Image (cartoon, rainbow, N blue to C red; front, side):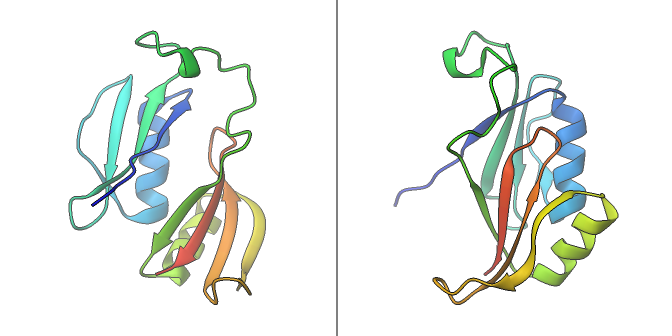
Amino acid sequence: MIKSQPIIGVNDVKKSATWYQKLLGCSCSHGGDTFEMLMDNKGEIFLCLHKWGEHEHPTLSNSRIQPGNGLIVYLIVEDLDKAWANAQTLNATIEEPPQLNQNSGKQQFSIRDLDGYYLMISLY
């Protein structure tokens, strides 16, 4: 089995964690000002949030570099309508409204998170 738990640099870990919880209905499993792990409803970690400049990681040292260049955070959810409603409640920057992805055959939408990361949210 291979799993991925991407870590993204954020300006405010607690604020970003709360935003993702409101968007996706996920929970946190670490806690703290510098690092957080986001978990789905089965307890699986799917994304980690890391404060810029902490712990001397070379790729997380400079928040002035455009976050997410070359990265799409692709999230699969069971309830796309709820995630879409949550995104609107959060006043997320909408990149693409819900639509059918012709390649995957799945409904999806795209938004930006608080730090400017491009999120593609697709139906499971």
